[in-house]
Image (tube, rainbow, N blue to C red):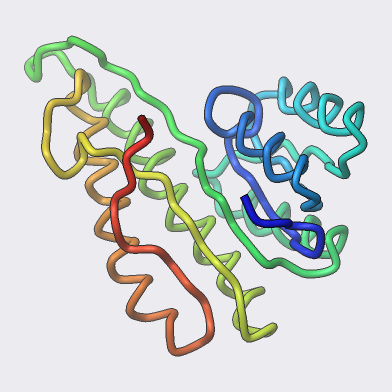
Length: 189
C-alpha cells in the first residue's frame, strides 16, 4: 500500500466491518482520518487508531440525512484542512431471506436511503470540497450482487446496483474537475 502521510480521508461506516478495517488501515499508512458512522462504536475505531499513533476523529453521521452529511463533511474538512479522499463504505442489509411479498416498504426505504441516497449525499458534499481544491478521489462501495443478482435481500441488490450506476456517472462527470471516481468493480477475496 502506498504511503498516505499527506492524505486527508473521510471513511464512512467506520464503526464496524470493512469500514472500521479501512479506517484503521489508511491511518496505519499515515492518513488523517475523519471516521463517520451513525453507530458510536466508531469512537472505538478512533481509539484504536490513536493507540497505534495515528490521527483520527469521530463524527456521528446519518448518511441518509443531508443536513447531517453536509454539516459533518464541512466540519471534518475544517479539521482535516481539506479533503483528498472519500471512502464511502457505510451500508445496511435488511430483509435477508424475506420473500418479496413480505418485504415491507419501511425496510425497502431504509436500505435504499442508506445505501443509495447515502452514497449520493456523501459524494455530493465531498465533491463540492474537492472541486474547489481541483483534485480528489471518491470511492463508493457497491456489491457484486447489485450487478449480477444473487443477494439474500431483495432491497439490498437494487440499492447497490444503483450505487454502481452512480459511480459510472460520477467517473465521467467529475473527471473534468480533477476528481477520480473508480468505475470498475473490484472483488474482495
